Length: 163
Image (cartoon, rainbow, N blue to C red; front, side, top):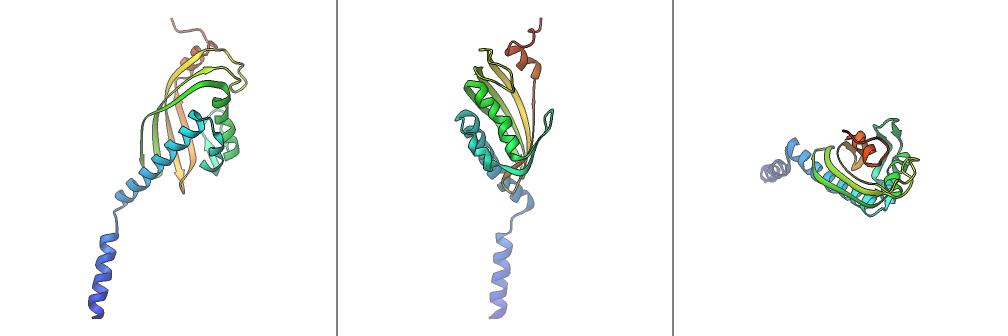
């Protein structure tokens, strides 16, 4: 009888185990859902208070200059909310492998407020970009954005348009 019970316990344990790839896929799917929701709320809805709990305490934004700490990360992204009206942050594609995410996005808006100290120009922007992010324990630990800053500055009227 003990052998049967032991065998059943071992079998149940074996069937309940998932591979590392399956675990990464499950974690990745949860991270994608969470990460997508954070940016929908923070940028599109303008409720940046979600960023208070979205980042790890020691989060890093790999920008120039580098931004460190969750409060500073929130302040960084608040510039987009205060600087632009009619904001649309569209996640065109996002995928993950465990705690690593890649997001392909589009940002549209009208520059009607101060944006990193740049006074409102009244110009509209429409830029594409990619973000590489790392999650830790279900929170954002690192991010690095890639977009064509020259085109962005041209759309704001801060640089002459390419000929």
